[in-house]
Amino acid sequence: MVYCFTVRLEYIDMKKITSQKHCGSEITLESKLEFLKHPENYPDDPGKIEIVETHMSWVFLTKGHAYKLKKPVRYEFLDFSTVDARHHNCEEELRLNRRLARDVYIGVLALTADAAGKLHFGGESTPIDWLVKMRRLPAEKMLDYVIKTRTVRNRDVARTILILSHFYKGSSPVEMSRSEYRQNFESNIQASYQEITSPAYGMPGELASGVCAAQMKFLRREIEMFDRRVQEGRIVEGHGDLRPEHICLETEPVIIDSLEFNREFRILDPADELSFLALECEVLGALPPLINLIFKTYARITGDIPPEKLVQFYMSHRASLRAKLAIWHLREPKIQNISKWLSQTRKYLDLAAEHIGKANA
View 1 (spheres, rainbow, N blue to C red):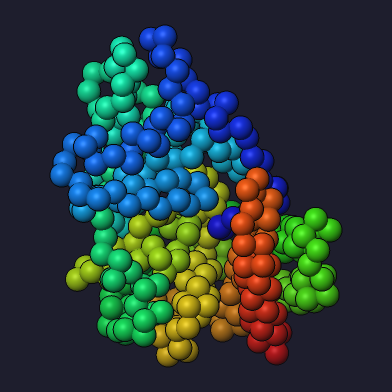
View 2: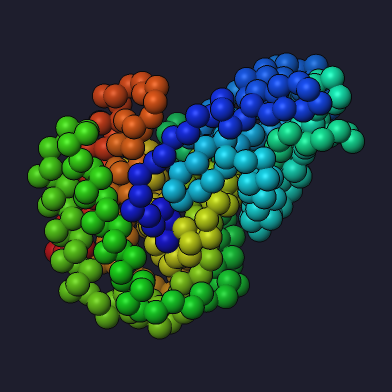
């Protein structure tokens, strides 16, 4: 299941690990970023370069393409700290995302350096890093944008869920014991509580404590409900990070940014993954009919009707994980907008409490 870990982030000295010696020249992370900022260095006619920084990468947007450079970071649940590791994960990103966005993911490109230390795209020189090249998607057709602007159309969402439902239906069940499935949730619940209530953040613990207790109560009371999902072969290798900003509502919808760096995080119940999508749509302001459409379409294609109480638990569990990820931003070396991340943590905790309340009603 997604983000099924109990560890804390480990930040490393990016400058130290990305300073490479090449033919007597030193190639730094800063020099790579500087190269990618300039339109004249690209193989096509890129126009203006726009840069988007995420937690794990930089994305350089041209008129028609997106070039993603993975950050040289290391957490306990992933390692992008070496060129080889980044190359491997670029190839994995390409492989996995061609499942649901085949024509978006164009290829993996080498960033090379010649004998003089000058950087290039491709060529015969030694690769000093790797990028994923993608077709640039229209921002106005992303699901998060149309929800926020109240221009979302039910038929577009239904087409997306239709694609996902056939994807899940065609996926082979992953072998997992019933106790292992439940234990994963129990570990996550405890880890989220411990992290959110860490004295380092100064968050009041009453709300997190109540959510944790209510989730554990449901998990231990409804053992048969969870066991049935495993017995029915519902656990598959899914997308891993199914959020509205990863869905583009083109004529044929595409779903991008499958989580590539750890297969364990993609092993899940489709009802859990769709609950995550429903939660994130709710956060953006989607109304209940749209959220209901997600599960109705899935049920029509797969014949699987997950219990409503289980969906509410999944949504609560996902909200707790999102709260934990939000508060983790306070551990970043150059933290900005402390109040933003504390507010977001509280928002997700409130949603976790609301949904587990419905599950236990």
